[in-house]
Length: 92
Ligand SMILES: [Zn+2]
Image (cartoon, rainbow, N blue to C red; front, side, top):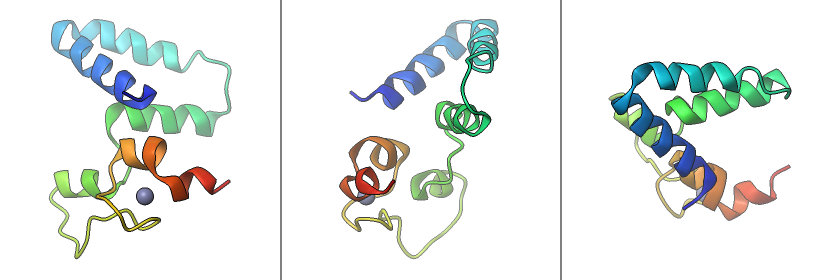
């Protein structure tokens, strides 16, 4: 699977086994020398906090469609938006 899925699933598993390890992983993220907006986005992806249609649905927000607004092919999940969407891939 994609890197984002790996990070998210690894984080979820670590959190179940040992919450303090997860805190350490999140603290380590902030020590990476990268632009703050990149780190913030990485944190949001790992925590499942990106405002994708599926995350909004999980939070109980009712919308008329949950399709990816870029390609209108499948529901917009974090994995789809950052790893699978052909339209998003070409937006730079
Ligand atoms: Zn798409």
